[in-house]
Image 1 (cartoon, rainbow, N blue to C red):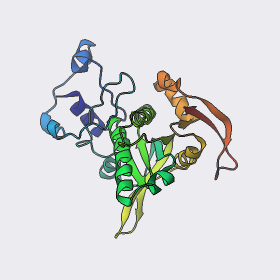
Image 2: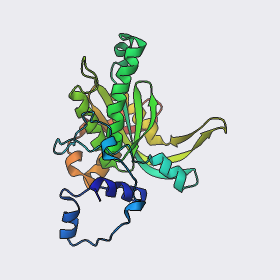
Image 3: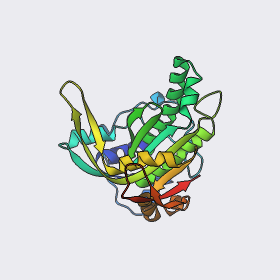
Length: 266
């Protein structure tokens, strides 16, 4: 059984964060951890030859290509809908990504060229979300809302997106610049709409806060709340050290009676 297939199975069984040991299954056995045979029939079936090609997303640790598993990875919302009565509440980390200076960039193109441009950008964003065990909730014009069950994986995805864009992988005639914002907190997941048109919605203060934070960071920057950095200090100190204080008392539109401590990676 491959490491990728094992990770997918563990995620489907309810484990919130799955990481594969550097040396794989042998390292797990050498460490003396208990193991048991799993019936391959219960694992998701996939064709390795059918995996999508690389868009340039690479590991933020060693620079190696990240394996593409999204053709068989079920969506997080799909799991919530299938396994729970909605609405439910979950602690999630949200990541907003949008194209910097998108109006000028899109206006200078024909509609067909603009669509191809946005598709290339969203391809990178989507692969990063899925490669780091997250998902895309919404595509909105020139931006997207991603969500993760792990603050570490959300941060890794943000860095991977920025690295891929810095390599100029998303369009042939120039590098795309984006802004990225992170927050974490309690999210309510529920159904909105009517029987004719329905959708799953994510509602929570962290979503609104992350959306507002996007305007506070320059192109290529990553901005995060204190809650994100605080969790990273426990889960992934090396990632937490990448952030520096941007503003200890940042006031955001719509949050007049609340100030936010914001951190950045520039």
